[in-house]
Length: 152
Ligand code: DQA
Image (cartoon, rainbow, N blue to C red):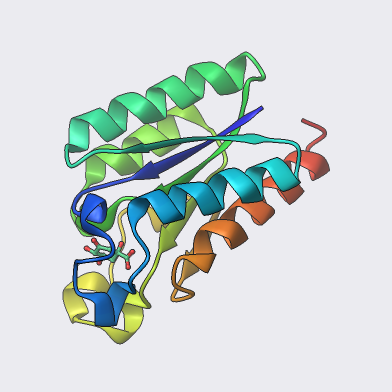
């Protein structure tokens, strides 16, 4: 099965964007790490990035269809700033019922107050924040453990 790894707005700029906050790894590095982490559990990673909220909603719906067919095990979602604004992404996660891990590279709770609230957390299976890009691996490990526990 696939693990869908969705990165939202501005994450295409990883590596050059605020490196003291987000590190020097690029999005390509993150996606390679995700493929490796997924393969270690016998999954494959389908990695996508968009700056557009509705595109992310569409991809969550795709994951829902894949999950229903037994082809998708879960979603790893770093929605970037949409985390803090998007009721649509909250509704999409709830609407498809696919196990979803919310990831943030930085510890959002140690940053500006506007980053402390997430619309996604109440809809997520779990949350990984503050471990840098290693958080994507932790999220994939968590989804693999959940798929095993759920017999999927
Ligand atoms: C982020 C944290 C968000 O607050 C921010 O808007 C991002 C990246 C992170 O990975 O730490 O774009 O999701």
